[in-house]
Image (tube, rainbow, N blue to C red; front, top):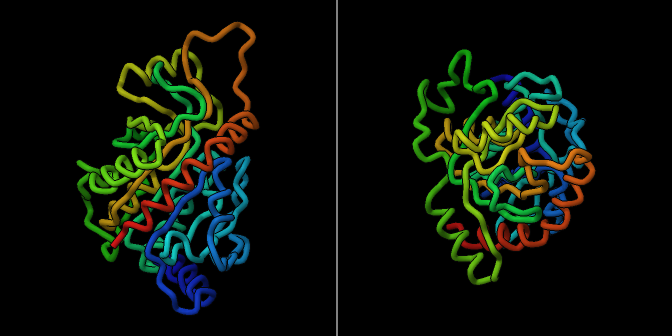
Length: 272
């Protein structure tokens, strides 16, 4: 709790006591949304007490606070991952800090492989549910100030926000998928047999992040909206010379960023 409070106090000192309405987590290649934030205050993770270093490709490692969609927001330009060697309390520290700062909703995004055969590179997928193969971030002593020992996860992704996003996408003529996101530890990309297994147990997209952040937000009863950009087709019928490449993932995410930015902005505009 001390680590959370120290980090939150430092960031609040940079925000002139303004309270962010929305927290946003920007995944691999999706940091460009931060460029759309008006009158930004940039806070490098390296300057924040108790924060670790973001080492993943396409993650700049800054908090960006400012105006987006008429609301004061705070965005993570890059996240922390379990595969970087950090314990879950460090991976999820920024989320608890944003909760401490007063966010009313959390928007999460990621680059993901599409295990659903109907998905194509560049698709946007609303996350309607998830399958967690990472350690649960709530293991250990419960932080009673944030939430109960056994939080309900029946609806981890807010149904009202999903409905609003679908209506906005229809207005903007943005095609959407809606599916189940699975997170494994990484950092290896999965084998074809693992992709097949994930599909069989109900996953539509697979990645290495996001779910610990969602669990921590829901522990504190913060509504969550999640979106994956499908950056590669994660199938089990590859050509013999096929190879997954991290740089290709970032390029595919960048190509889809404009549509995600438009949707996020309009969704934030509609928040009460």
